[in-house]
Length: 235
Length: 47
Image (tube, rainbow over all chains, first blue to last red; front, side):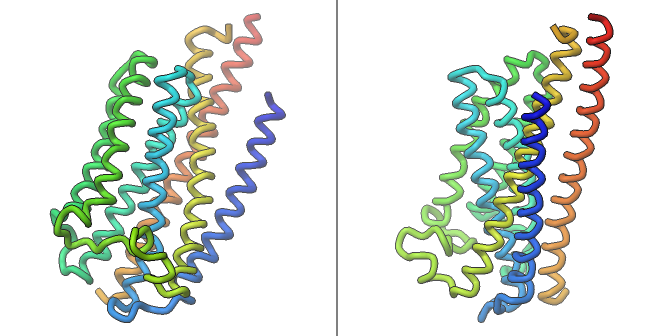
């Protein structure tokens, strides 16, 4: 057990070092090497944060969705810990996306916030998963809390396709996707130098995300073991 | 605020929040590890 812990710890350290290295490269590309946008100028550099953070938030809630389905099917504690850990990090990345979007919106749209369909649905996603955390903390029975959380986690994930399609279904201030478009390939729509900066930053955030998730999952496992030892005294 | 002001505001907030979260995770990990060690040694002592 201790050997497995040490191996996992070493794996996390390597992942953390890779994340740190890619973050530094990403910052250099995003802030210095990538050219400014022809229309928006330097402020467009917020895109190198904004797109990776929302994609990571989507990924995190997808992990909540899959782990919640697995928990409802197999009732294994590990799946619930994974869902809870991913939800916590997903909320952080959604909150950051909303803040960056607001800072980007002021110089480009002239407002910090508007009740645009995409912005509103993203705020709803943030509120659903904040509700998920509150619900989990309010239910004392661990199994009941996990079941209720899994159901809410599955329902909450269904908001993401709505967020993605909102710019097509409604007339919105938010622009349509630049990368994930059905009609164009990414390099047909974004200049290669900007696409490279975006890809490096996405990779950096992805590595950071898996590092944070591995760490949060380990904390969850340890807290679970502490609870068990307190309840049953190690039997 | 100029364009770089908005850029640095966004980058500053994002990286400060991520660093704070990372430090909070490390603190929670240390706390859980210490608690586990204490509980394990207590349960070994009573065996």
